[in-house]
Length: 264
Ligand code: ARG
Image (tube, rainbow, N blue to C red):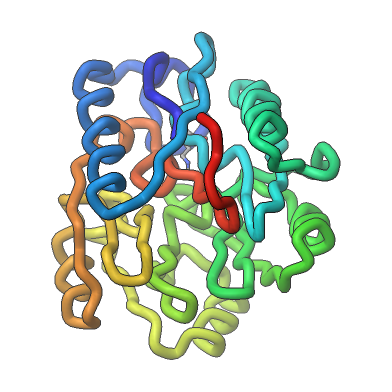
């Protein structure tokens, strides 16, 4: 995770961001710290990358890579405003023994668009990640990568439109996907939870699950009820300040899969 020390909305690169709407930086820090404590209380190890002045979106560290079996793939940002974040996180990977074999050739925004479901990686495209990065990722991580086309600008990263609950179960918002991609989801995940826009408008799908406990936006009460009905345990956390930038819980959390312990 990356502390929101320099978090702000000073430019607009998605439909959620309005630089004229003030961000309460103190509240953002409290909300983020509460997320850290929530993970710790669930038994997770949390490690940090240093925030960098002038990179107000660096708190959304999930976009800076994907880590599977202890192997990292760094990001390459679509926008100029976030471009430098990738290098800082790549350096963190290297300092912690996670080698990203090459700098990525094509634009990819890490776990913003790459979502690991068991042995498969679902990969979004349409707004940020270049579809050619999907094959690049498959070659690096030696995993099956399934392309999904996003069509609704409010759900510009896959992790705003789809949440991974366990190795087989996902939740998603159908209207965020192109028809052929929706068909892929329906065919692969017939038991998926279908989310309602009342919840996704609070970035309810931008969640982090350990397979049982699901940390999700406290405002996404309908989704929380759907999760409970399916035997998951919702753990509500308020991240309202980050929503002003189009980010939520998952965005602030890069999972280090296959990494035993890291130095922070
Ligand atoms: N302001 C950031 C951007 O537009 C928010 C990113 C949030 N990350 C995410 N995976 N949705 O890039």
